[in-house]
Image (cartoon, rainbow, N blue to C red; front, side):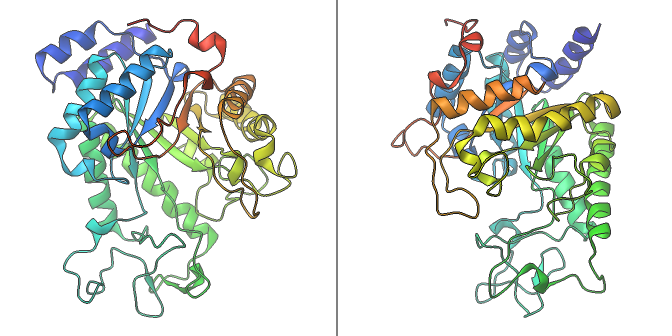
Length: 380
């Protein structure tokens, strides 16, 4: 019965697509939530037909069933609905479950209209420093003001484009307040106007945004699944409601009606001492520690919410250290195995590399996956 309902839901999206795509996808068996196994790809990779074909071929050859497509971080695919629809259609025709990842409150240049000397007139839509300039984080990114109701309206409308393009799931990322300022402009410099920002206000704002997004999009697209990405620490069940201080309260967010919570449990982004001295050295221990209690909690309190996790398939310096642990097949397989042991069989490999004309090494390799996953891979 559940499988039938999911099939009907999938076909409701396909009605917007080309008849040939509808016919092809109608024969597909899309994964149930706990069966999702996928890889991430940037918007520019998705827009390159040859590169998209390469990702599709790799996914099918390695028994993966899902592709997460960046909609507005590497490039703004969300601004070109026809192109977004073509990407979703190709994935559906290949019997791959398309997820559209949308970055919510971390902004980009599209939020800077009519620049004057490099900065626009002061809009309420962006976070500003009390030094009278647009506030930027350590990566020089601007941020949309999570407190602004007009910003909510614009963002939710843009997320709706992802659903209309045919993606079966919308994945909300950066649905949080910023946490990493600079020495000269720390987060304490952010000017929230009349509001004295408190941890309680941050949690209420983020939870209410997710709740409203779920309500609005489900009314427009009843079969759409909505996922929320949570920072690794934010996805932990601890005695703190918001361990990261970014407004993400997993207990409250899980009760908003979201279908899926995705832990961004990258070992390299945990502080030294979490699971081992340098967490990136023990990926299996980190994943087990990060997911086990959360999985148990959601199964008891929110059994309809699927817990998934991102898998670190990239190399980066370990948080708060000068240590860099190269990540390859052994580290990726260790994470997948540990996630499954923790009861989390829904996972997506994350590597944000942008492949310019195939000049860079393809981010994923067949030996990343345990034998039991590749054993049933399609041969076409």
